[in-house]
Length: 356
Ligand SMILES: *Cc1c(COP(=O)(O)O)cnc(C)c1O
Image 1 (cartoon, protein in one colour):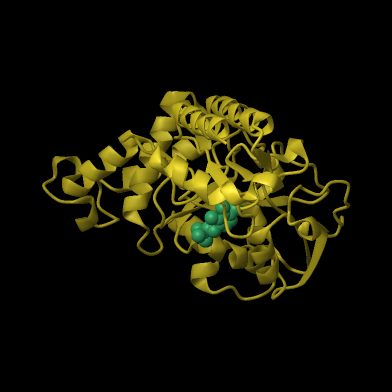
Image 2 (cartoon, helix red, strand yellow):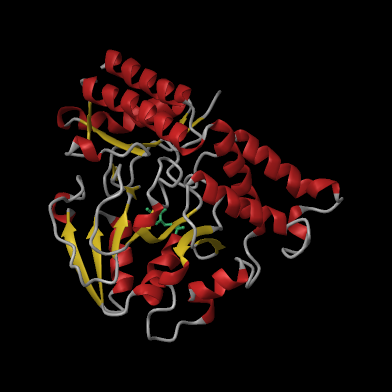
């Protein structure tokens, strides 16, 4: 049976990315050695990093003066590296969910944190608006896509101070005005590569302004200077990321990804709104994520939830169980997810509706 992969992360990757990475693991460039057996400083690996950096810059239209880094530690380590490197006195954070909360918690260890707004009281079912970012903050941190709650900022905000963003789950799904940010980071395992590599886009001249000592490995300057080679980088995930970046470019880049994301999301949200059994969980429809589409059974059909999960699973749907903090269902529709998978899920919802 064909599987439709709606996993939230690690998640679907283009088939050719998996095949090319598998091939390189067996025999890297005809060398008779595996990609896992060669030095990261070997002359055939450096071009992988160089091309991945170049494609990042090209696909996201990154201006001069920024570095692209491939690090370890996940987005979760960036929650601490960001304030370590950028928070001198005060930072502003928008609280839009679990990941934002974790970022806020880490920042509090380094200075004053102003939570400019929060939708916690409503279980993060919308993205707050109409707040003020203090003009004397060192930066304003946002989570552009809230993977768990299914809300998303579809456009870059305006801010009186430079922005920093966790883009773990929506990177390369839309064009971004990089010049508004001094740092953008994310774990690669949602839209880019297998788990194990973290991408960081950092503005070079924003680094080095805090007065504290920063441990070498946590200092962005170390990795800017080292070209992501200060220590051994995650070689296999970087190789896979390069294959995804090539695929992205061949498919038409972020504009095309944005078009596909909206097309998939429009189809699925239309069914959620139409279907008698289901409802979306995000209250402000403009905030609905194109990447993580959350829905539940309407109150009067709540007891059918387990049945629908079983029904859909039997028809090849994978990973649609909602996160425990929201319940119901979550269909993650990342870049590599074909429209046909969304159509298959919609088919399940319609068939289930007819049967009940
Ligand atoms: C998955 C996710 C994280 C956590 O990433 P790790 O790489 O596991 O640390 C952080 N932020 C967002 C928005 C995520 O989706």
